[in-house]
Length: 116
Image (cartoon, rainbow, N blue to C red; front, side, top):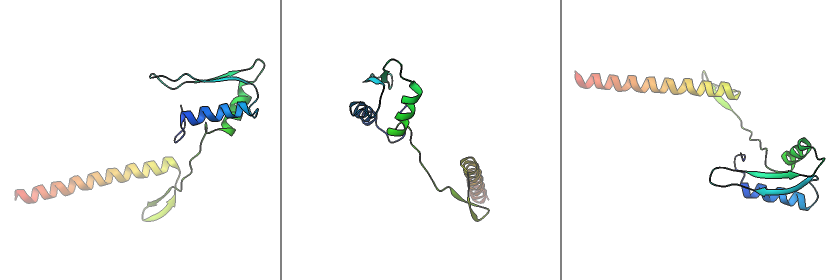
């Protein structure tokens, strides 16, 4: 799988560029074998080359691995707090449940008012 906001063509081009400039040692061939069924990039290694070393270098030198940071601040009990991802999602789900309950209660009270 290709990381978010990274294109396959860019990735294959960058790997080929690293191999041609000798910045990435131990790679014999890079092929794009993608078709309708899915994404497939084949990197053939030279004999005696450690796949772990090549993989680590690819992660460092290309966009195979990307990080996205975010400032996850939410209002909890009326006060801003910085939360972890799990806590943030839990507070968001609780908020959405509260909104749905309040909306349903409001619609019910409007329907009851119309009936009387």
